[in-house]
Length: 491
Ligand SMILES: *[C@@H]1O[C@H](CO)[C@@H](O)[C@H](O)[C@H]1NC(C)=O
Ligand SMILES: *[C@@H]1O[C@H](CO)[C@@H](O)[C@H](O)[C@H]1NC(C)=O
Ligand SMILES: *[C@@H]1O[C@H](CO)[C@@H](O)[C@H](O)[C@H]1NC(C)=O
Ligand SMILES: *[C@@H]1O[C@H](CO)[C@@H](O)[C@H](O)[C@H]1NC(C)=O
Ligand SMILES: *[C@@H]1O[C@H](CO)[C@@H](O)[C@H](O)[C@H]1NC(C)=O
Ligand SMILES: *[C@@H]1O[C@H](CO)[C@@H](O)[C@H](O)[C@H]1NC(C)=O
Ligand SMILES: *[C@@H]1O[C@H](CO)[C@@H](O)[C@H](O)[C@H]1NC(C)=O
Ligand SMILES: *[C@@H]1O[C@H](CO)[C@@H](O)[C@H](O)[C@H]1NC(C)=O
Ligand SMILES: *[C@@H]1O[C@H](CO)[C@@H](O)[C@H](O)[C@H]1NC(C)=O
Ligand SMILES: *[C@@H]1O[C@H](CO)[C@@H](O)[C@H](O)[C@H]1NC(C)=O
Ligand SMILES: CC(=O)N[C@H]1CO[C@H](CO)[C@@H](O)[C@@H]1O
Image (tube, rainbow, N blue to C red):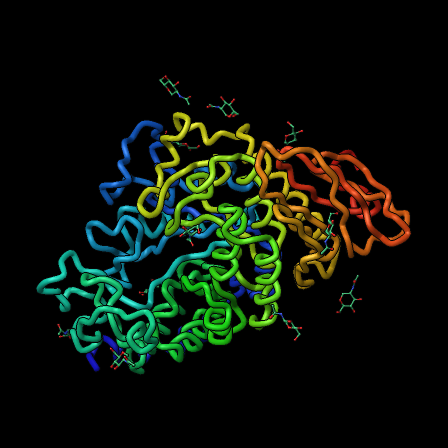
């Protein structure tokens, strides 16, 4: 063990005692709605609407923490009360996304100064919003694959902290943990106590220094599982682990090592993608089945991060340009279980392809208008408003698990506590028809409001309603009684 690590270890117990009064617990995160930004691509501090950004070049385009701060009205006016930003540590020259870190103890100066980051954190907290920071514990980054300059890494300044190079065989868990994601990403020995301890010291300080409320942890399936509990313990905040895997029985148990946190819900994302965006490849029955797989395999499915777009996958509109499909995707994200995560630009119907295509510069869209009259912007704001009403007025909303009620070829009806939703995958051309919400369990004779159309229905003695469907619109039902005082549809 090096001297620097010993010095840092000596402050470990002190770091753990740092009061975390601003830090948020998993239970507090449940009610939140997250807006994910790629820091380099969301907003520039000079408010430029013309600064070029060719996503294929994999270069910095100039987005900053200050730029995000200037756009907090745009984000909070859509009803988001948390943001997730890119990793903040110093990176290689091409690490515009933040995942090629070289020094845990220096910030990425492309994104601003320590004061800028503190200002952003403060501005968020002033609005009662949370700050989630992306962190990487699996690897460091090097400009080149040859002659890696280990001595320049902080604090892991020796090759002995890293595994020797091997290519990952993803069918082999040991290989995933000890081999390298790419040949320029030296893989840390997260099974070694000195590495775990150094990370614990660092994260405790980082959370305290910048008043961080939650962490998104990169590539959790590629680190030693046992390294996660001490890391989250030292952080003292909600941990949201990322692992891209479609197998519920493999992915969901990772929740066990995230200290009451959750995972980025990839299993349900893959199922959703096949069902919703590629209707025909899978059916709504498969999605319904997966809702139950989630419940059956998760410690708590309400603590996962739910998403339909992110910086690593093609956007919904790239798969399917139909705007009603995109609106239903937002409906799914905001109204199923878990903590919703909307990826910047999803509300503008951006259509970027797989990484790097989906990392558009937001300021170049519609000449930097951050358009607040775009149709999906309205959908997002409105459904956040509906969800927040449910969160604030039904004590059990966030913890009551979503159930699939009924489905047809292109539609699924589901219920999460006081909200019943019918999502439609048929697109704008869908012919008008009716859909009966079998098993919705409304009180006999109660007035039910579809808050999308503001149409009202009266439940039958069996507690069912037959609602009009058409044109690819989703239906979001609450009782008129529950909506009283909300202003939604005039109630
Ligand atoms: C690592 O850093 C420590 C503290 O700065 C220093 O004492 C040590 O010599 C460095 N090790 C290497 C291999 O550069
Ligand atoms: C950018 O806009 C923010 C507020 O929206 C303003 O405070 C700041 O001064 C502007 N910066 C420049 C360089 O115009
Ligand atoms: C799994 O990967 C590890 C590390 O590369 C290797 O030692 C082991 O032989 C592999 N196991 C199998 C069954 O291939
Ligand atoms: C946190 O701030 C302290 C005091 O400025 C500094 O010594 C420490 O290196 C910082 N740690 C991190 C991870 O930012
Ligand atoms: C989404 O589904 C399509 C169609 O099956 C498939 O080609 C694509 O790889 C899927 N994408 C993801 C990220 O699973
Ligand atoms: C979930 O568990 C229940 C109760 O054990 C079982 O009846 C059901 O078949 C399971 N569903 C799935 C999709 O695994
Ligand atoms: C952006 O600005 C250019 C030049 O003023 C104009 O031609 C174009 O129509 C604008 N585009 C949008 C989407 O507003
Ligand atoms: C914003 O979106 C609306 C609706 O699509 C469109 O009519 C308007 O031109 C857009 N505004 C700008 C500045 O491009
Ligand atoms: C959405 O658009 C409708 C119709 O233009 C408007 O009445 C409503 O206030 C908007 N809702 C939100 C939350 O922006
Ligand atoms: C909320 O859940 C608790 C515990 O499961 C239960 O006792 C209570 O009745 C529920 N409240 C409502 C309004 O459903
Ligand atoms: C499984 C199930 O209950 N399916 C029903 C869902 O709703 C449609 C349309 O109302 C019915 O036709 C199905 O029988």
